[in-house]
Length: 346
Ligand code: NAD
Ligand code: WQD
Image 1 (tube, rainbow, N blue to C red):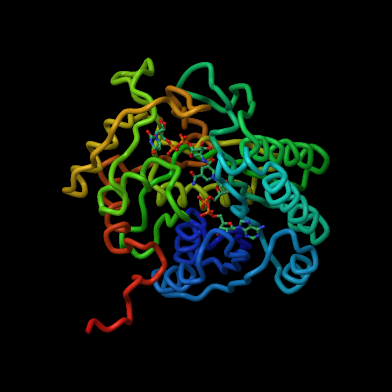
Image 2 (cartoon, protein in one colour):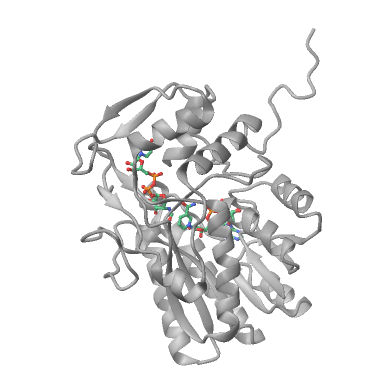
């Protein structure tokens, strides 16, 4: 198949592109590099041993999208492109609605006009808001606690309306839980800008010596050790879920949501221990106040994805931490060259 991958230079997109190329698909990546680097695409091609077509462009640019759809006969679109920082979305909600919601509208409208009606969309467990219990299945009520989450929820609603209006649409709404880990090679991985907001990139930078210590946000939750529990899944398993979803939308119509998670929850303390084990480095931490908006526990019931997509997460927490560490240790500055690279010592 010929697949358009928006946001394919990003963390999850890059891992998915390697698997798409390996499976023999033709891949066109459209990414404005607002949160990623051109170097990632080079590494994706190296890992897959095959080229893809890369277009540095903004999803919101209607003319570029039209040209891209006119130049290719896409069979399906995987839509990763969007902004994803919860905190930033609270400070700049219009940027989030503009980039995520308006960008998606431009994409969906172009798809409709060119008759490309198969879509895999990156949704998030954040659409469950403050879940009443765990595990969370796809029938749980949807809500949002911040503009980022609301943008995902709005896009889901738009896609459900679209599928209801025209039976030719076939859409998978993939609700990711907490993706971590990296490709086994250590060549591609998560490269956040500035100080990370998320747990694993933060821990990885503490272990590699870039940050002094981890702040554990809350030690008084009603969980087994008082710290927050999440459903971490390996990004390679998550990427594989996109290929399974592509298979599904080839035959099934409508818009269907799927949880992609392992179904297991790990606490912050358990993750610290697993990361220390995987890296052989200490991860100093202090327990501080709860982070506003955090829930005590969030983990998936992933049985619908198993039943309908034939997808199941295969990798455990040890492998997730080992692979995150391999990437971090080999690329302490992410995709940027070492600050001293090329400089001669005197
Ligand atoms: P990422 O930031 O690494 O990747 C997103 C990519 O989209 C980046 O390469 C960025 O440059 C690109 N992009 C952003 N706006 C664009 C625009 N207007 N036009 C073209 N390209 C644009 O993020 P990720 O972690 O790979 O996440 C991918 C998707 O999955 C996002 O939609 C995100 O909201 C969603 N998601 C991520 C997580 C997570 O924890 N990483 C969890 C749930 C859902
Ligand atoms: C995990 C656990 C924190 C950092 C976020 C988004 C969500 C989704 C995935 C996109 C929690 C604790 C964290 C730190 C800590 N993204 N923690 N110290 O909050 O589950 O989900 O990313 O859709 O929308 O909200 O992930 O990695 O930030 O936190 O103690 O420095 O680690 O309190 O219990 P979260 P996270």
